[in-house]
Amino acid sequence: MLDKHLEVQNYYGKELDKSEDLKTNACCTINPPPKEIVEIISQLHDEVVTKYYGCGLTIPSKVKGMNILDLGSGSGRDCFIASKLVGQEGRVVGIDMTKEQLNVANKHIDYHTEKFGFRHANVKFLEGNIEQLDTLDLEDNSFDVIISNCVINLATDKAKVLKDAYRLLKPGGEMYFSDVYCDRRIPKNLQDDKVLWGECLSGAMYWNDFQKTARNVGFTDPRTVENHAISVENEELEEKIGELKFFSVTYRLFKIDGLEEDCEDYGQAVRYKGTIQGSSSSFDLDHHHNFQTGKVEPVCGNTFLMLQKTRFAEDFEFFGNFDKHYGIFEGCGGAMPFTIDGNEEAPCC
Image (cartoon, rainbow, N blue to C red; front, side):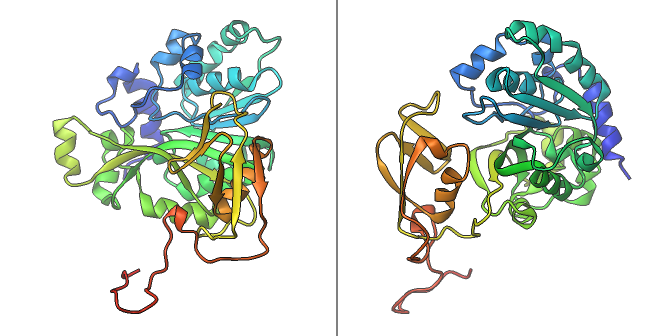
């Protein structure tokens, strides 16, 4: 049986020397990051950037002064980006189990502290397995944001990772991360293929299993920020995976009491003030919630809470409450699974 933890350490610590050594584009970021992030990346040490193996942008808006935890921080690229964004008053903690990657990250802490003009470092790196966060000196309810970039697929106990992340987040905090998902459950023989596992493919969760797992640990309403199909572009590996289809997806999961499994209508609305840096004309909560500045937008109860009970509260005006329920909120794609007059055939689910 494949020792997946050992194989990941070998793959990212010994077999790969730079991102160009990857055999597929699963662990590659496709969409260009925002201008602000591009400017920060230009300030990072070359070795940190060269050894980056992420698949998305994992740092959300409005993190100044926040406490951020990075699961599977690797060479530290995302941690150093977050370090600049949170500023001197914030802090960033990176967790990784690959010594070679940790050595790169630790080696360049002072470089980035000086580059960003900080009086002291606001980032540190800990050696550890993201499936064993409970063994590290991390306080419950202590992080505003948890990020991860194409790493959770490499974990064997993904439910444990999500459960610990929920525990470590402050109320109103969020887990904002990119990872690889599959359109179906992956056969055991492919999960034991060390190259497919190391390339972030055969450890990918079936998307529906992920959503169920997230809800079970407390992240009741997972929201997709962006997604794109992965083209493996390696004939040998394409033959192995056959009809399996893979996607890189960025999710945001909020730790908020009161979220419901479905989007319910309480007659609520919000108005965005245009006050989030880099989003003066509009703000994207997820891939189907774009709030234009000054425009009153009807929202479901979950979206209402995701804005009112988080760091975004001061950036919105809120209208309504939870006193009266009007049924399912169809603006989020919900609809009754049956018809009123009985003349039309209802969907099977």
